[in-house]
Length: 139
Image 1 (cartoon, rainbow, N blue to C red):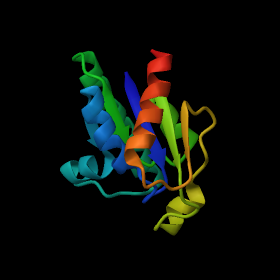
Image 2: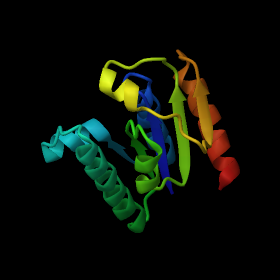
Image 3: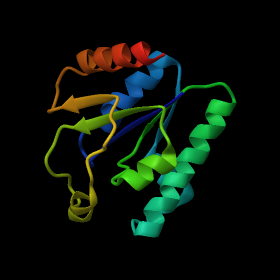
Image 4: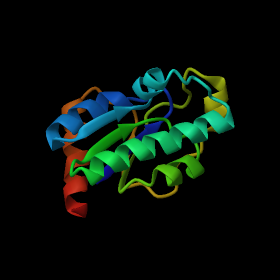
């Protein structure tokens, strides 16, 4: 099972992804960590697409090895979300603008969402419970 947590930079993706992965016994892939490992900070259309394929390849490998995966990355347009091909998509709709104008201009709200975090939260445990509940309903 591949879970994608997407949203603008600073929307709380990693804040939710880390405890969710721990709770599910899943592998956590963070897009910034992966970009750092590959030393690839190219945010052109080609660089963003390469990152989507990279995240999919890593997640698919972990799933093939029998592990669930929680991935957090912006995935700003539907094309990149489709490349990643999540089994379960969480949209962090918690802020109106992120810290990067180019990403703000590019970001498209996802069409199909399995769980929608609407608005900023200070209760990570409560949000986590809601996401896990919806995830378990889909299992």
